[in-house]
Length: 167
Image 1 (cartoon, rainbow, N blue to C red):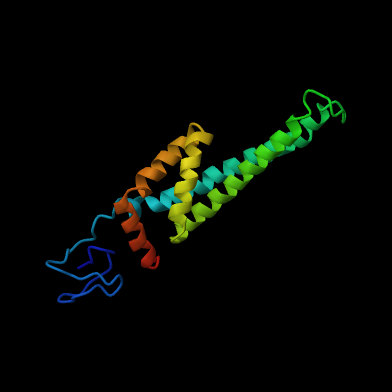
Image 2: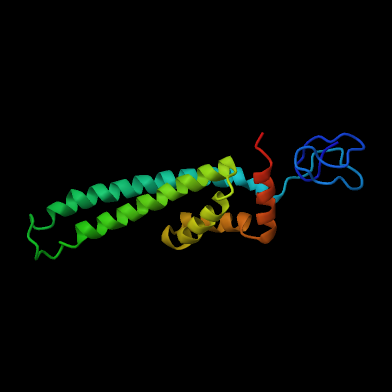
């Protein structure tokens, strides 16, 4: 028999789950309960954010290298009045912001895989930013992240996952 809250094994006549502490009321299921939406998707979300952040890292590095090599040469060999003088600092700043967002994505993906409390909030913030800044892939991952983690029921389910140590 298994607890309908966390899925751990429960003995007949037991009043509370020894793993999550949930009160056992009524009949105990004899099969593993179907995991909730968060439990089913949190690992995949963590892996998607790690992979997406790897691509963002590569794009940010390429942009930074281009800004400091190609556009530095187009700058008119150091002339401050050149029409392309603004490109090097502009693209460098954009690349640094892109790399910072990728670092946050790595942190969020790792946090989801480790079931850290702060990871849900961080990944929701990054998902919202990605809705508009990384079309179409960031939009797709952002919508998927919000579908899994944004509802109030998902918050409660994620908190229950965090309180139970990963097996």
